[in-house]
Length: 145
Image (spheres, rainbow, N blue to C red):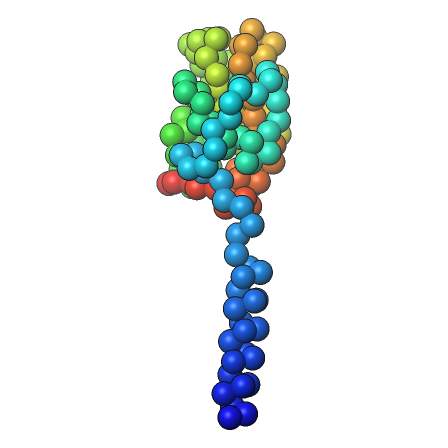
């Protein structure tokens, strides 16, 4: 009888411990809510808001990290335009300035720089992921390789 109670106590403790380790939130490029309005130009969005904004029709997702970083894991549907590769400014010239662009990098620094370049070049709808893919994965966001 004592061993049954002890086992039950351990089982309850284990269940509570595992519940505490469960992800608090999960963000995704296809699941969850969709933003009702486009983010303001130049906005830095937290992972959940970024995920919701991505689902708006016509949004183009751009990863501004290096090709090697991109290959190691990126958000589903992202295209890679390397900010540091020397051709980023030229690649911007081929993009429609009235399309909505969602940018991200590793930590938010490069995407912030890319965003500034885009807004100063006349892009009318662009925002980025605050904290980059690091924040995304910390929020249990989906990635692909």
